[in-house]
Image (cartoon, rainbow, N blue to C red):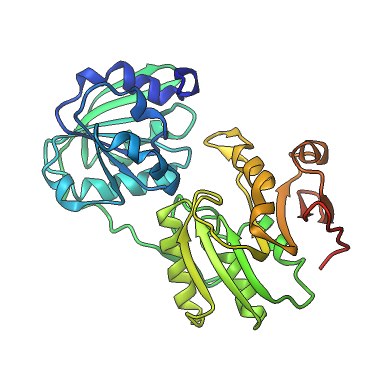
Length: 343
Protein backbone atom coordinates (compact mmCIF):
# COMPACT_ATOMS: atom_id res chain seq x y z
CA UNK A 1 0.00 0.00 0.00
CA UNK A 2 1.32 3.43 -0.97
CA UNK A 3 0.44 6.75 0.62
CA UNK A 4 0.15 8.33 -2.81
CA UNK A 5 -3.05 6.28 -3.28
CA UNK A 6 -4.68 8.02 -0.32
CA UNK A 7 -7.15 10.83 -0.89
CA UNK A 8 -6.70 14.21 0.78
CA UNK A 9 -9.20 13.52 3.58
CA UNK A 10 -7.35 10.35 4.58
CA UNK A 11 -4.00 12.19 4.58
CA UNK A 12 -5.41 14.81 6.96
CA UNK A 13 -6.64 12.14 9.41
CA UNK A 14 -3.28 10.36 9.31
CA UNK A 15 -1.48 13.62 10.03
CA UNK A 16 -3.64 14.35 13.10
CA UNK A 17 -4.26 10.76 14.27
CA UNK A 18 -2.38 11.17 17.56
CA UNK A 19 -4.72 14.03 18.45
CA UNK A 20 -7.83 11.86 18.67
CA UNK A 21 -9.15 10.34 21.87
CA UNK A 22 -9.13 6.65 22.86
CA UNK A 23 -11.53 4.44 20.90
CA UNK A 24 -12.37 7.11 18.36
CA UNK A 25 -15.06 5.99 15.91
CA UNK A 26 -14.39 6.40 12.18
CA UNK A 27 -17.55 6.46 10.07
CA UNK A 28 -18.80 7.52 6.64
CA UNK A 29 -17.08 7.62 3.27
CA UNK A 30 -13.94 5.83 4.50
CA UNK A 31 -11.20 5.02 2.01
CA UNK A 32 -10.47 1.30 2.08
CA UNK A 33 -6.73 1.56 2.53
CA UNK A 34 -6.78 4.20 5.30
CA UNK A 35 -6.41 1.73 8.23
CA UNK A 36 -3.07 0.52 6.82
CA UNK A 37 -1.60 3.90 7.75
CA UNK A 38 -3.14 4.43 11.18
CA UNK A 39 -0.56 3.74 13.89
CA UNK A 40 -2.49 3.64 17.13
CA UNK A 41 -4.72 0.77 18.26
CA UNK A 42 -7.60 2.94 19.32
CA UNK A 43 -9.90 3.33 16.35
CA UNK A 44 -13.33 1.73 15.94
CA UNK A 45 -14.21 1.55 12.26
CA UNK A 46 -17.76 1.27 10.95
CA UNK A 47 -18.07 0.20 7.32
CA UNK A 48 -21.07 0.22 4.98
CA UNK A 49 -19.65 -1.21 1.77
CA UNK A 50 -18.87 -4.82 1.02
CA UNK A 51 -15.53 -4.12 -0.67
CA UNK A 52 -14.03 -3.10 2.69
CA UNK A 53 -14.58 -6.60 4.08
CA UNK A 54 -11.71 -8.07 2.07
CA UNK A 55 -9.31 -6.01 4.19
CA UNK A 56 -10.77 -7.07 7.53
CA UNK A 57 -8.32 -9.99 8.07
CA UNK A 58 -5.48 -7.45 7.95
CA UNK A 59 -7.18 -5.04 10.35
CA UNK A 60 -9.03 -7.17 12.90
CA UNK A 61 -6.06 -7.51 15.27
CA UNK A 62 -5.42 -3.78 15.17
CA UNK A 63 -8.90 -2.24 15.15
CA UNK A 64 -12.48 -3.02 16.08
CA UNK A 65 -14.46 -3.21 12.84
CA UNK A 66 -18.24 -3.36 12.39
CA UNK A 67 -20.39 -3.74 9.29
CA UNK A 68 -23.41 -1.46 9.67
CA UNK A 69 -24.34 0.36 12.90
CA UNK A 70 -24.03 -1.00 16.44
CA UNK A 71 -26.14 1.45 18.48
CA UNK A 72 -24.68 0.56 21.85
CA UNK A 73 -21.15 1.50 20.71
CA UNK A 74 -22.24 4.97 19.67
CA UNK A 75 -24.11 5.52 22.93
CA UNK A 76 -20.86 5.39 24.93
CA UNK A 77 -18.60 7.15 22.43
CA UNK A 78 -16.72 10.34 23.23
CA UNK A 79 -15.16 11.06 19.83
CA UNK A 80 -16.15 10.39 16.22
CA UNK A 81 -14.59 11.19 12.83
CA UNK A 82 -17.09 11.46 9.99
CA UNK A 83 -15.90 11.24 6.39
CA UNK A 84 -18.12 13.42 4.23
CA UNK A 85 -18.99 12.04 0.77
CA UNK A 86 -19.49 13.78 -2.58
CA UNK A 87 -23.23 13.42 -2.01
CA UNK A 88 -24.34 16.20 0.32
CA UNK A 89 -27.80 14.71 0.96
CA UNK A 90 -26.33 11.33 1.83
CA UNK A 91 -23.85 12.86 4.27
CA UNK A 92 -26.48 14.96 6.02
CA UNK A 93 -28.73 11.92 6.39
CA UNK A 94 -25.89 9.87 7.88
CA UNK A 95 -24.80 12.57 10.33
CA UNK A 96 -28.34 13.23 11.55
CA UNK A 97 -28.77 9.50 12.04
CA UNK A 98 -25.56 9.38 14.10
CA UNK A 99 -26.41 12.44 16.19
CA UNK A 100 -29.42 10.56 17.58
CA UNK A 101 -27.07 7.83 18.81
CA UNK A 102 -24.23 9.97 20.16
CA UNK A 103 -24.10 11.34 23.73
CA UNK A 104 -24.14 15.04 24.54
CA UNK A 105 -20.63 16.59 24.49
CA UNK A 106 -19.30 13.84 22.21
CA UNK A 107 -16.57 15.43 20.07
CA UNK A 108 -17.24 15.24 16.35
CA UNK A 109 -14.81 15.83 13.47
CA UNK A 110 -16.11 16.16 9.92
CA UNK A 111 -13.68 15.91 6.99
CA UNK A 112 -14.38 16.22 3.27
CA UNK A 113 -13.46 17.78 -0.06
CA UNK A 114 -14.17 21.52 -0.06
CA UNK A 115 -16.12 21.18 -3.33
CA UNK A 116 -18.50 18.52 -1.98
CA UNK A 117 -20.99 20.74 -0.16
CA UNK A 118 -19.36 20.26 3.25
CA UNK A 119 -19.44 24.01 3.94
CA UNK A 120 -23.21 23.76 4.38
CA UNK A 121 -22.90 21.80 7.66
CA UNK A 122 -22.83 24.94 9.78
CA UNK A 123 -26.22 26.01 8.48
CA UNK A 124 -27.76 22.53 8.35
CA UNK A 125 -26.50 21.18 11.69
CA UNK A 126 -26.11 24.27 13.85
CA UNK A 127 -29.05 23.16 16.05
CA UNK A 128 -27.27 19.90 16.96
CA UNK A 129 -23.54 20.63 16.87
CA UNK A 130 -21.56 23.37 18.61
CA UNK A 131 -18.97 24.16 15.95
CA UNK A 132 -15.53 25.26 17.15
CA UNK A 133 -13.05 25.14 14.24
CA UNK A 134 -13.21 25.16 10.44
CA UNK A 135 -9.77 24.43 8.97
CA UNK A 136 -8.81 24.53 5.27
CA UNK A 137 -6.12 21.93 4.60
CA UNK A 138 -5.11 19.86 1.53
CA UNK A 139 -8.15 21.05 -0.48
CA UNK A 140 -10.34 19.77 2.35
CA UNK A 141 -12.48 21.29 5.07
CA UNK A 142 -11.72 19.83 8.52
CA UNK A 143 -14.41 20.70 11.07
CA UNK A 144 -14.35 20.26 14.84
CA UNK A 145 -17.29 20.54 17.24
CA UNK A 146 -19.30 18.68 19.86
CA UNK A 147 -22.86 17.38 20.14
CA UNK A 148 -25.08 19.86 21.99
CA UNK A 149 -28.51 18.45 21.13
CA UNK A 150 -29.42 14.91 20.10
CA UNK A 151 -33.15 14.93 20.81
CA UNK A 152 -34.79 16.62 17.87
CA UNK A 153 -33.12 15.41 14.69
CA UNK A 154 -35.65 14.68 11.99
CA UNK A 155 -36.60 11.08 11.29
CA UNK A 156 -34.56 9.96 8.29
CA UNK A 157 -36.59 7.42 6.36
CA UNK A 158 -36.63 5.74 3.02
CA UNK A 159 -38.91 7.94 0.92
CA UNK A 160 -41.40 6.98 -1.75
CA UNK A 161 -41.70 8.89 -4.99
CA UNK A 162 -45.36 8.57 -5.98
CA UNK A 163 -44.61 9.61 -9.55
CA UNK A 164 -42.74 6.37 -10.32
CA UNK A 165 -43.84 4.32 -7.31
CA UNK A 166 -40.33 3.44 -6.11
CA UNK A 167 -38.59 3.95 -2.78
CA UNK A 168 -35.35 5.92 -2.55
CA UNK A 169 -32.70 6.79 0.02
CA UNK A 170 -30.18 9.67 -0.16
CA UNK A 171 -26.76 8.37 -1.10
CA UNK A 172 -28.10 5.39 -3.02
CA UNK A 173 -27.66 5.76 -6.77
CA UNK A 174 -30.51 7.51 -8.57
CA UNK A 175 -31.98 9.47 -5.67
CA UNK A 176 -35.67 10.43 -5.92
CA UNK A 177 -35.94 9.69 -9.62
CA UNK A 178 -35.21 6.81 -11.95
CA UNK A 179 -31.89 7.34 -13.70
CA UNK A 180 -32.28 8.13 -17.40
CA UNK A 181 -29.45 5.77 -18.29
CA UNK A 182 -31.24 2.89 -16.57
CA UNK A 183 -34.48 3.70 -18.41
CA UNK A 184 -32.59 3.77 -21.70
CA UNK A 185 -31.04 0.38 -20.93
CA UNK A 186 -34.45 -1.10 -20.10
CA UNK A 187 -35.85 0.16 -23.40
CA UNK A 188 -33.62 -2.34 -25.20
CA UNK A 189 -35.40 -5.35 -23.67
CA UNK A 190 -38.22 -5.92 -26.16
CA UNK A 191 -37.67 -9.55 -27.16
CA UNK A 192 -38.49 -12.38 -24.76
CA UNK A 193 -35.71 -13.45 -22.43
CA UNK A 194 -35.35 -16.36 -20.02
CA UNK A 195 -32.90 -17.86 -17.56
CA UNK A 196 -30.81 -16.47 -14.71
CA UNK A 197 -30.00 -12.77 -14.74
CA UNK A 198 -27.58 -10.76 -12.60
CA UNK A 199 -28.44 -7.15 -11.80
CA UNK A 200 -24.88 -6.05 -11.02
CA UNK A 201 -24.62 -2.93 -8.84
CA UNK A 202 -28.39 -2.92 -8.48
CA UNK A 203 -28.79 0.44 -6.67
CA UNK A 204 -32.48 0.56 -5.72
CA UNK A 205 -33.25 -2.48 -7.89
CA UNK A 206 -34.79 -0.73 -10.91
CA UNK A 207 -33.33 -2.97 -13.63
CA UNK A 208 -34.04 -6.34 -12.04
CA UNK A 209 -37.52 -5.40 -10.81
CA UNK A 210 -38.56 -4.14 -14.24
CA UNK A 211 -37.39 -7.37 -15.87
CA UNK A 212 -39.10 -9.55 -13.25
CA UNK A 213 -42.38 -7.75 -13.83
CA UNK A 214 -42.11 -8.06 -17.60
CA UNK A 215 -40.82 -11.62 -18.08
CA UNK A 216 -42.08 -14.80 -16.40
CA UNK A 217 -39.25 -17.18 -17.24
CA UNK A 218 -36.41 -15.43 -15.45
CA UNK A 219 -34.76 -15.35 -12.02
CA UNK A 220 -32.82 -12.32 -10.82
CA UNK A 221 -29.84 -11.98 -8.50
CA UNK A 222 -29.59 -8.44 -7.13
CA UNK A 223 -26.07 -7.55 -6.01
CA UNK A 224 -24.47 -4.39 -4.70
CA UNK A 225 -21.49 -3.26 -2.68
CA UNK A 226 -23.57 -0.95 -0.51
CA UNK A 227 -25.69 -2.01 2.47
CA UNK A 228 -28.15 0.87 1.98
CA UNK A 229 -28.68 -0.07 -1.66
CA UNK A 230 -29.72 -3.59 -0.75
CA UNK A 231 -32.04 -2.33 2.00
CA UNK A 232 -33.87 -0.10 -0.50
CA UNK A 233 -33.84 -2.83 -3.16
CA UNK A 234 -35.54 -5.23 -0.73
CA UNK A 235 -38.18 -2.62 0.13
CA UNK A 236 -38.91 -1.99 -3.56
CA UNK A 237 -39.15 -5.72 -4.30
CA UNK A 238 -41.61 -6.24 -1.45
CA UNK A 239 -43.70 -3.26 -2.58
CA UNK A 240 -44.02 -4.84 -6.03
CA UNK A 241 -45.18 -8.15 -4.49
CA UNK A 242 -42.67 -10.23 -6.43
CA UNK A 243 -42.52 -13.97 -5.78
CA UNK A 244 -39.64 -14.59 -3.37
CA UNK A 245 -38.63 -17.69 -5.33
CA UNK A 246 -37.80 -15.49 -8.33
CA UNK A 247 -34.96 -13.47 -6.80
CA UNK A 248 -32.17 -13.31 -4.26
CA UNK A 249 -30.21 -10.37 -2.85
CA UNK A 250 -26.48 -10.54 -2.07
CA UNK A 251 -23.57 -8.33 -1.11
CA UNK A 252 -20.79 -8.28 -3.67
CA UNK A 253 -17.86 -6.08 -4.57
CA UNK A 254 -18.37 -6.39 -8.34
CA UNK A 255 -17.95 -10.17 -8.79
CA UNK A 256 -16.27 -10.96 -5.45
CA UNK A 257 -19.29 -12.81 -4.04
CA UNK A 258 -20.69 -14.17 -7.31
CA UNK A 259 -20.25 -17.94 -7.59
CA UNK A 260 -22.30 -18.98 -10.62
CA UNK A 261 -22.73 -18.18 -14.30
CA UNK A 262 -25.64 -16.20 -15.73
CA UNK A 263 -27.48 -16.02 -19.02
CA UNK A 264 -27.56 -12.21 -18.89
CA UNK A 265 -25.80 -9.58 -16.79
CA UNK A 266 -27.28 -6.06 -16.76
CA UNK A 267 -25.49 -3.07 -15.29
CA UNK A 268 -25.48 0.70 -15.10
CA UNK A 269 -21.84 0.93 -13.96
CA UNK A 270 -20.34 3.82 -11.98
CA UNK A 271 -17.77 5.91 -13.81
CA UNK A 272 -17.07 8.36 -10.98
CA UNK A 273 -15.33 8.11 -7.63
CA UNK A 274 -16.45 11.07 -5.53
CA UNK A 275 -16.11 14.07 -7.85
CA UNK A 276 -13.74 12.61 -10.46
CA UNK A 277 -14.12 10.20 -13.38
CA UNK A 278 -12.75 6.83 -12.32
CA UNK A 279 -13.02 3.73 -14.52
CA UNK A 280 -11.68 1.20 -12.02
CA UNK A 281 -15.01 -0.56 -11.40
CA UNK A 282 -16.00 -0.24 -15.06
CA UNK A 283 -12.77 -1.92 -16.19
CA UNK A 284 -13.12 -4.69 -13.60
CA UNK A 285 -16.57 -5.50 -14.97
CA UNK A 286 -15.39 -5.65 -18.58
CA UNK A 287 -12.29 -7.69 -17.73
CA UNK A 288 -14.03 -10.28 -15.57
CA UNK A 289 -17.63 -10.73 -16.72
CA UNK A 290 -16.49 -13.60 -19.00
CA UNK A 291 -16.04 -15.81 -15.92
CA UNK A 292 -19.66 -15.29 -14.85
CA UNK A 293 -21.54 -15.56 -18.14
CA UNK A 294 -22.78 -18.70 -19.88
CA UNK A 295 -21.58 -19.70 -23.33
CA UNK A 296 -24.27 -17.86 -25.27
CA UNK A 297 -24.89 -15.21 -22.64
CA UNK A 298 -24.09 -11.51 -22.69
CA UNK A 299 -23.40 -8.43 -20.60
CA UNK A 300 -25.54 -5.41 -21.49
CA UNK A 301 -24.56 -2.08 -19.97
CA UNK A 302 -25.37 1.59 -20.34
CA UNK A 303 -22.49 4.08 -20.54
CA UNK A 304 -22.46 7.86 -20.62
CA UNK A 305 -21.10 9.15 -23.92
CA UNK A 306 -18.25 10.93 -22.14
CA UNK A 307 -16.60 7.49 -22.27
CA UNK A 308 -15.70 6.94 -25.91
CA UNK A 309 -15.95 3.73 -27.88
CA UNK A 310 -12.17 3.78 -28.37
CA UNK A 311 -11.59 3.76 -24.60
CA UNK A 312 -13.95 0.82 -24.22
CA UNK A 313 -12.33 -1.08 -27.10
CA UNK A 314 -8.97 -0.91 -25.29
CA UNK A 315 -10.54 -2.65 -22.30
CA UNK A 316 -12.61 -5.28 -24.13
CA UNK A 317 -13.19 -5.38 -27.88
CA UNK A 318 -15.84 -8.11 -27.91
CA UNK A 319 -18.91 -5.89 -28.13
CA UNK A 320 -21.34 -4.15 -30.41
CA UNK A 321 -23.38 -1.01 -29.88
CA UNK A 322 -26.97 -2.02 -29.29
CA UNK A 323 -28.53 1.44 -29.12
CA UNK A 324 -27.42 5.05 -28.78
CA UNK A 325 -28.85 8.49 -28.08
CA UNK A 326 -27.35 11.93 -27.43
CA UNK A 327 -26.33 11.13 -23.85
CA UNK A 328 -25.98 7.35 -23.49
CA UNK A 329 -24.81 4.30 -25.37
CA UNK A 330 -25.88 0.70 -24.79
CA UNK A 331 -23.04 -1.81 -25.25
CA UNK A 332 -23.50 -5.55 -25.45
CA UNK A 333 -20.43 -7.65 -24.58
CA UNK A 334 -20.08 -11.32 -25.36
CA UNK A 335 -17.55 -14.13 -25.05
CA UNK A 336 -14.67 -14.04 -27.49
CA UNK A 337 -15.81 -16.93 -29.69
CA UNK A 338 -19.47 -16.04 -29.57
CA UNK A 339 -20.54 -13.41 -32.12
CA UNK A 340 -24.00 -11.97 -31.51
CA UNK A 341 -26.45 -10.01 -33.55
CA UNK A 342 -28.58 -8.90 -30.59
CA UNK A 343 -31.26 -10.20 -28.26
